[in-house]
Structure formats: structure tokens, C-alpha cells
Length: 218
Image (cartoon, rainbow, N blue to C red; front, side, top):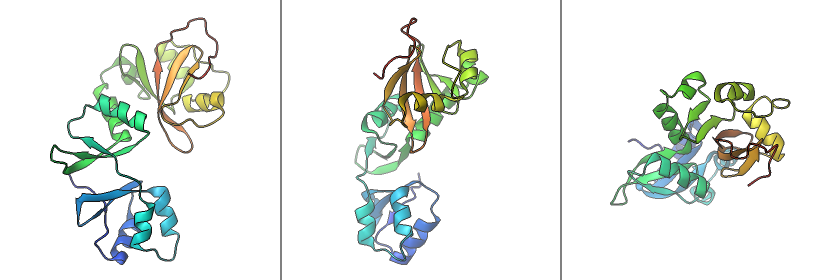
């Protein structure tokens, strides 16, 4: 697979042009070839560089974060859990020889999972709700709460925010990080992915405490 990244062995003008035209939020940075990767440049650090009249290769190196590697052939479900545990969203895939074969992101995995379950009744009724197992669902933060209650026969509160993201943020009074757990109306909820301003995806389990009102974070 073609990997788009930044080669620090190129001239600084070429690097600057590539950075300014990039549509990616994360870019691997390497020397000579992708197997010599030195780090990953995040958009927020890229933006600070591009706001300067000029910048050096040393500044690019200082702005990168340590690369995160995953073995080729790792099951999607396993990698989803690993992303959550490590609080990562971007990984370089390596083969048994340590050579880089491609890139995988948290968003890629979530899209694949949604695709795998497109024949499920829940996903065919509402694309924001995907059955993950017999006891859990992956739900978009944009999902409408009333629609969730109707489709899944749930009983989430509807007297406040209209979306799952709004409900979670109101309850926690902050935008949660990936991996945060909470319980609302007896439903255990785990944040699968979030960014700086919203919950993107959450995992909701079948309600365990039928008499619970609003629980505490777990």
C-alpha cells in the first residue's frame, strides 16, 4: 500500500509544500524510505509549523511523536481494544521482518466493523447503531436518543440533549477521553473514540441494573 509521509532527506522547500497541501491529520516522518520512520506528525503540531514564516527539519523532528507499530494480521477486534488501551488512533503496520506495510487508524477499524454488520437489523434500521455482540452495540455520538430508544427498546433520558454525544458530555460535564467508562440510566457506556470537541463513537452494553436511575462513572 502506498504510504503518504514526509521524507526528511528531501529539500525543505519540497517538504514545506507537501505539508501545506496535505489533507491528512497524521503523517509519518522518515528518512530515505518509510522503514526508517522517526515519528508521526500530528495536524495540531503541523499547524503550528505552517503558521511560521519558515521552519527547519530539526523543528519537524522536534514536533513528531513516537510511532506506534502493530503486527500485520492483527484481528480488527484485538486492534480496536489495543487502540483504546494505548489511547492511540494511528498505527504503522509491520510484517514479520519489521518492514512497514501500511497504516491503520481507529476510524478505519470502526468503518470496517460497521461494514461487517450492515446486514444486522439494527444497522439496517439506523446506520448510527451497530450490533457488536450479543450484549453490546457501537453507537455514533451523533445518534438521536429518541431513535436509539425506539430502535433498540432502550430507555435513555430524552428530556435534555438530543444526541448521545450531548447526553454523555452533559452527564460528565466534560468531553471524555477514549476509554472513559460511565453508566447512564443503568446502561454501561464506554467511549471508543473522541476528539477535542465531541464523542465520536461509544460502546453501549445491555442494561445490567434495571432499577438504576443515573449511575456513577465506572
